[in-house]
Image 1 (cartoon, rainbow, N blue to C red):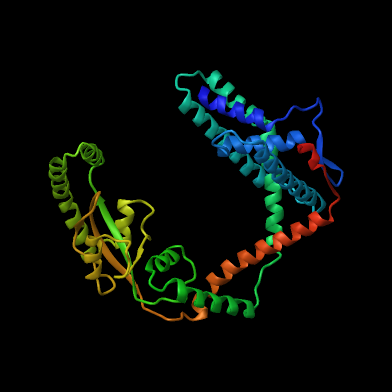
Image 2: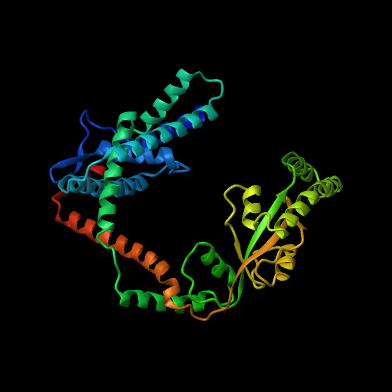
Length: 380
């Protein structure tokens, strides 16, 4: 804990130059001042939360960082002033979410302190937390104020985003064609990229080969047995590990046989089985093709024999237990999926990009129109 505090102190000393009793102003935004202290406080807070520097920063690094931070603060002040002009205020729901974030941040800091100062009293931990905030130029009050400002700016950006609510057919068609030609190139000989896009629910227009939608139910070994096998592996006792694996698999067989019987009788669905093994996993699945390098040999062997939707494989061993596979669906090879099938996904992606560009343009115009005076020579 002392080492951590020492590092933060060093960073603070480098970030904060010798200041006069009143911190010098480094910029004005429509008559509102931004001081050197505000710039350094923002940098200190970032260094505390992100470990910005692994070693002592140079003066040139700090100057560039201060200039970049100043521009960030100028933009923030312009946006805050716009929230006032546009009448954007915080409602009860906003304040409740801010309060939750505030206590989450403090809770994370307390957890860090407790981890690095075991045996300290509650009062000592509270002092450590206050010290960490202070070293970052923050208090609990200023932290709360910062959260309120960022929430107001977030509401402003959401308002701007909602100004763009629809795209014309010509734009959508052009994006569809561009994506098709791009995927023809990127997916060629690279099934991993195709499968990654499908798993990420991205619009896929070009499917050069058939894909199976496979669900995997894994029955895990006992957790204590797994831990013991990991310990034995560290000392190279492969014989004992193999004996334990065989014992554990023998214990799993009756459970797997019962599950297969329940599936065959229609007592449960495969999604029900997945949910019983891992809550929340009932709808999880994977995309598989014989071209895919993402799966081990045993998985491939058992996936390849699944030909009809609803087929279930025989059990096979995994690193953590045993598994069975279920063929939930088949995506046939298609050179070009019709626009109607991917229009919604393309529109969502494109709309997000257009909205971001719209927000960027509006903010740029506000900054250009603002009365901003920069005094960067203060950083010399």
